[in-house]
Structures are given as C-alpha cells and as structure tokens.
Length: 128
Image (cartoon, rainbow, N blue to C red; front, top):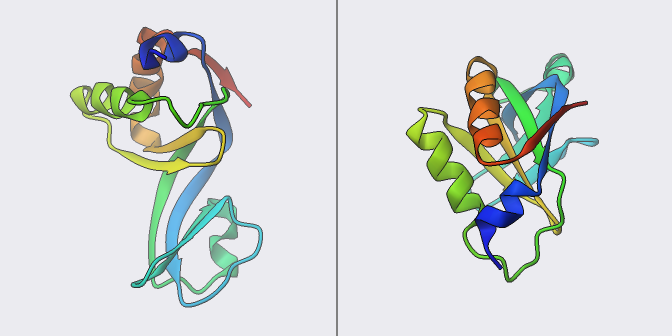
C-alpha cells in the first residue's frame, strides 16, 4: 500500500477549538489524549480547560488536525511523509496515533501553512 496514494484520498479535519499540551501529577478526565510514561503524564486538552487544572508545564496554541481515514497497521510511511513535508515548510508537529488513524497538532501560527502543505499532498481539508 502506497502512503502517498492514501494521503491523496484523505480528508483532514481541522478542529475549531484551540488545544494545549500540559503535564500534571494525576489523572484528568475528558482529555483528547493522555499519555503516561515513566517520567510524566501528558494531556492534550482544549485551551478552555486550562483554568480547571493545575499543570506543571503548559504549551498552549495548538490546532488539532485529524486524518479522517482508516490507516491499516501494515501501512508504512504515512506519518513520515506528513512530518517530512511539514518540516520542509518549517511546521513543527506533535503527533498522536489512535487505533485507526493519526492526529497531529500544529501551532496555530503555522496552521495555514500546514493546511496548504497537506492540500498539496492531495488531502481534502474540512473545518469542523
């Protein structure tokens, strides 16, 4: 399976809410994503929730982009193409993978450049 052809058939959903990436000491219900490793617990949340939490570190100002396509586990290089093309256009990403698809966060200031780049890869853009 060719990742470039999958990209050409993909829709990228742009969430209307701004997001933040934050670390906390404990659990946080209703997050978009929570990642626990041996050193920290990281949460991806909408910025409007920042006032509800006691975060150790916070990086606000992210836009959430979701690839609205089912990505088979055997697909190789999908996120590599996305990350490489965005990097060539000076767009940093925070990548997350779910069971069926990938999500990336880009800084709000880089959103239009990211969307232009993804559009050039053949993705349809949908703001939700």
